[in-house]
Length: 184
Image (cartoon, rainbow, N blue to C red; front, side, top):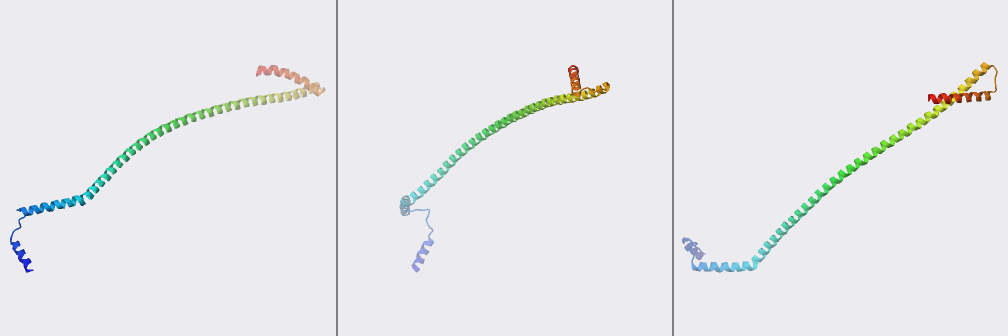
């Protein structure tokens, strides 16, 4: 240890000459640099450059994929907008068609109701006319009965009731036709 301490003390007294390069130090620095460069070029640079190239390729692929997906998304968005516009047009067409169909159904129902109402009125008129005829016939029969009863009291002698009725009915039918058509 004595020798080592002596060498250190001698060199410690001298200031290091870092900025005063000597030829010997410069040559060894260049030799070491070139050897290190060759070793790095042979063993370290290819994997580092390969990793950098692979990373660059992954990044470029990711950018290309993102661009492709963006273009697909824009295309799908445009397609969906067109489909939405078409759906709106179809919906409006269906609504218009529904309105037309509803108007047609309403018109048909109104016409059918009018037709049924007119038919009901006609049936009622026919029924009223039939009932009127029945009432007139009934009144005629009663008038015949009353006339026969009045005539038999006045005459005080009773004729054959079937013959009497025939005479009065013929008379009333002639009178009813003359006055019925004039009154009606």
